[in-house]
Length: 267
Image (cartoon, rainbow, N blue to C red; front, top):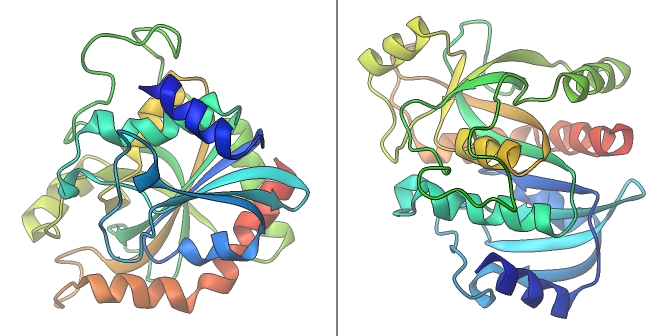
């Protein structure tokens, strides 16, 4: 299936991206601001999962950003949409087969650590994925990677150093922490937040860790940034909503876009 999907992509564009970028909830407008060379809707790729989440447009955008050839996912898929971890791995693996070697993941997340507030950027240093299925369950795809990939440097240390330097040089506040992926679509309960806080999570969301596992398996160097869009459940006496996520993302989109562009320029 992956090889057939790659053949379809190659029939539409011969761009070989250096960097792949996944744009999370409320963050997709960046894809409209690059030097676009080709757009391919997910629904036109046979067997490909289609985004249904709000603000996820469901397409690959190929082009140039800061002098680098890039492919952006303008929307991802999630477990809560009814997709399996294997479905979530499809786009990541396909972008690796396109030729991309570095992957920038972004997401909207709830802040657990009280040092994180809505509007903050958190560079992910590690993740907790034990509450969701691994995309590697089942027969290994040997041409992608080995059966038991090491995850000790899942979020590449050298890329993290570069991101820190980029943030400092551009006066963009950047925090660092551990991200936990849960299934959703419901927001977490206060008890669940207490549990994953005790496990060491600084932020929580409904994506990214599965993508990272698939990416490490197939040889990507990975980095990831969470936009903290809300306080996690129980941190404040306040109900959570999906609208709040998008509103916060919109309010800091300019800084987010600048950060991603400068990271692309530097890695």
